[in-house]
Image 1 (cartoon, rainbow, N blue to C red):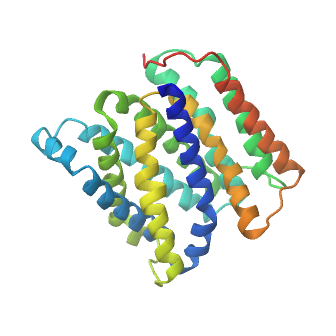
Image 2 (image 1 turned 180 degrees about the vertical axis):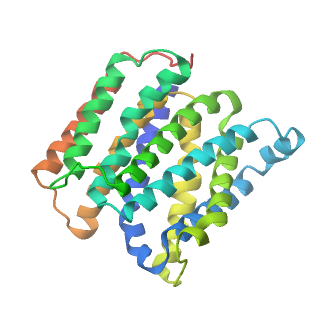
Length: 293
């Protein structure tokens, strides 16, 4: 398996981690306010990454401009995505939130076109649209598409998530993934700690479930997952990354089925099939080394 294929397989693993942690996070949220949970999650992840990459950090302080600015930009985009998604979820339905967040899949090729001034590759664009159609089937059953305030906030979150994928794809090949990973997660942690008390009535009732959710999401779904994403995007495009991340709702349903016996109806099954089709459209083209323009 060549390096590009290994990178894309690693992104599938990341999508699996994010999708499979949904049940655990849902169980923990009654014990903690949402933005405080995010702040604690990113703080734990940034501490773990600082320890893991302490050798790289010494070089960063010797030449503080190298990789730091890029990490701050990526971290601000990442945190913006989580904040707007969270604020929007208070005012819209979970199904519309999932669908609108998934619009990042089709926004990424558009943003890449603007950054690199080249048209999206045809098969990547088609694959993104097909995968987006699958996500709509999995998430929008019985939901009106009329845009409300919560929907607009969620759409803003999708824009930030798309910009984060483009930024990581742009910066990682130039600066390396280690410092980029540490700085972006630390930036998100600092922003979370700075604003959570302003935007919500913060509370935490410590329990085993909450501790487990923070440990799993902080260490596995944040520190490890975003580091793997930064490494992988050195070897594949942001558009392919976005399409691969369409696996996340499929893995979320699979976990819900195993843990909670939540059945998948015909719309969900058709949506999952379309997502897989979109990914195959992208992945079955002749593979060549992907270079950033």
